[in-house]
Amino acid sequence: MDPTESKQEYQKYVDKKSPNSPIGKNIFNAFWTGGLICSIGQIIMNICKERGFDQTTSGTIVSIILIAIAAILTGLNIFNKIGKFCGAGSLVPITGFANSIVSPAMEYKSEGYVMGVGGKMFTVAGPVLVFGICSAIIVGLLYLIFNTQAVTLV
Image 1 (tube, rainbow, N blue to C red):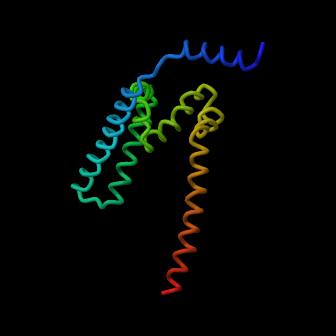
Image 2 (tube, rainbow, N blue to C red):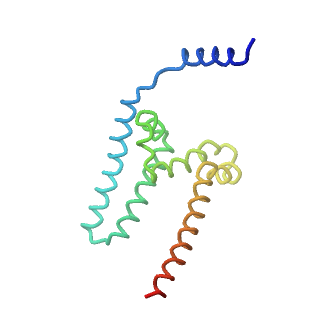
Image 3 (cartoon, rainbow, N blue to C red):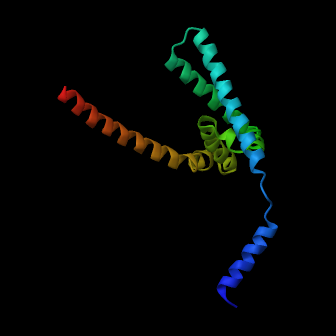
C-alpha cells in the first residue's frame, strides 16, 4: 500500500470523526467574556480613582484584585468551567496568568507543598516569566542605548 494513500485514508477518517467547531459562537463568547473581564477591571479602576488613588496605584490594585479573583475561581474549579464556555476570552492576560499558576499547583498538591505545589506551580507560567523578563531586559537596554545617544546629540 502506498504511504500517501494511507495518509489520505487516515485524514478522511479523522475528518469524519472530528466534530466541527462553531467558530462564530466561539468568537462571540470570547469577545464578550474578555470585554466583561476588562469592564470589571475598569470599574475597579474608577472606584479606586474616586477614592483618591493615582493612576499607578489604581492599576496595581486592579491587578491584585483580578489575580485574586482568578486564583480563587481556579481553586474552586469555576474558572475552568468559564474557560470551557467562553474560550480564549477568559484568558485576558492577567486572569489567564493567575490561572496558569494556580492550576498546576492544585493538580500536584497531593505530592506535597514543596515538591508538588512549589515545584510544579510554574510549569506553565515559568517559560512566560523567563521570556518576559528577558524581553524586558533587552528592550530596557535598547531604550537605554538609544535614549542616551539622543540625549548626547542634543
